[in-house]
Image 1 (cartoon, rainbow, N blue to C red):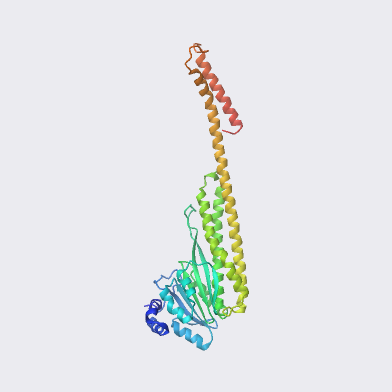
Image 2 (image 1 turned 180 degrees about the vertical axis):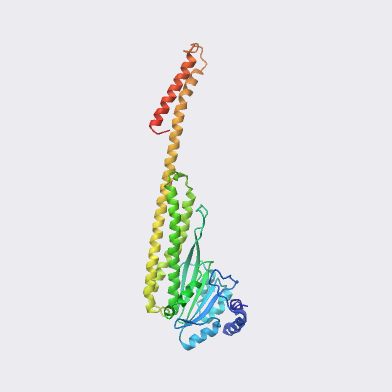
Length: 375
């Protein structure tokens, strides 16, 4: 049984003592790092639990409670606990061990939160919206372009807890990248918070680049020779997906600004400058999204204008042919009246004369409409 599976029994075993008993059972089987997509999820919420000292990994298979106790007794290092979609019961013992606020735990379990930053005593609770570009062969009116998830981060003096929701946004590569540069991890839990924020914002920029390719494709088709035949549902769908991306990016400005300017015990002063850099990248992402929104509006208006022009051209053609057909209709209507005395009724060349007049009149009208480009 994995450590994550044992943690589900925390509420039954009760308190820190129960956690110790659960952690001892984890020795029977090494814990698997589920942070990489290539590693098959085992249905457990624990991704990894590692303690660091001076930026160096201390233990890869240590017990959660023992790792926290060693860090607190030595006064050095911190513990990084990674979770994936935990339940309320799984978080109960962890919340007691790290003294996490019940409101933050409720937000963590329910997910679907706006990006935000909250302070509970000396603990920071940050929520980030993750985004992922959904690959598709061709954009349709039902294509999913952007998929969203969430990452919640608890940051204290000697711990950082990351909780991920969704099937993307893995933090495994990020953890390995940080471990390859101990100087970053030596700054403490706030370095992990900065790395997560930077990772999330970089994903925003990557997704924006991919969305731009879809926009370029739609724009090219709209302004092509037969642009009026483009399905407007594709444009509306892209606009809806762009709105989903905007909801993830825009609200993050406030939390990043607060992390960059407002002091907090859990955030090292030297780390705040790096949050300003992340905030700059986020501003660039917001500007690009705003520009995309305006461009989509222009593309949609251009498409509607093309549809109107095409409809007008069709109406002109219909009107021209109706005018041409009206000439023989009028002549036939006149000579179809049942009057006893009408000119040319008994004339030998009357029929040929009528056909000739109708043909010449139709031909003249056709040439006139062709010159005016109605036909």
